[in-house]
Amino acid sequence: MQTFFQTDTGKVRQHNEDSVGLFRNDSDIVLAVVADGIGGHLAGEVASKMAVNFFEAEWKNTSNFETPKEAEAWLRNIVNQLNINLFIHAEQNEECKGMGTTLEAVICTPLYFTIAHIGDSRGYLKNSEGFKQITDDHTLVAELVKSGQISQEDAVIHPRKNVITRALGTEETATVDIKTLTWEEDDLIVLCSDGLSDKVSYQQLNEKFSDDHPIEKIGNELISLANDLGGEDNITIAIIKHEPRHDEKG
Image (cartoon, rainbow, N blue to C red; front, side, top):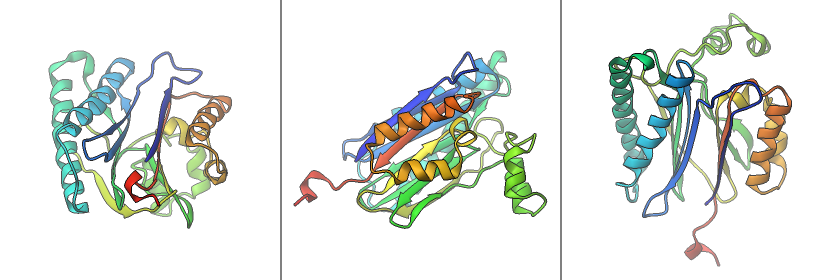
């Protein structure tokens, strides 16, 4: 698998509350994590870094995942442990009161990928059927759209569009969305924080990923585009491209 990740502070903020990591275990299975911290620059940075570091440490103890059920169980267990760690840390450290983080974490095997999602960071899939979002935003406006109270167009400019309804670490328990999908050679998985998805439209993302360019070029161009469009928030992206294993190539 080809991989790329990058995070950028943006043009306005002094601190980067996003964290990102991409790791391989002994079986060459890839784990990608994007976390967008909340709770102020100190607490937000702490929460997102704790999330990525915890996943990295636990990933070293993994090997192969024979079935999607194993991958889903691992992600659910790690998310639950991480939520407790974050909640306790916030309770015990005054400067971290109210801290939390969004989370996108995806396990990528040759046959399938399993993604865990909480908050308003996003996961996308580019395959033969096109480019599509595969996570549901946990935000106030997403709920308003789902209930028919506002349109999708209204949601883009809604004054409370950044109010999230779920995060890790803010409560004693957390509800995480976990799903498994199959993927094939040349398919792409994209994880990003809202610093990218709030500035770069779905159409612009679709156009970028329709180009047959290296993923590093696409990723860097998207970060530059988000900055060109204002860069008010931290900007983070991770891209994983499916490729056959070396022993599968003919």
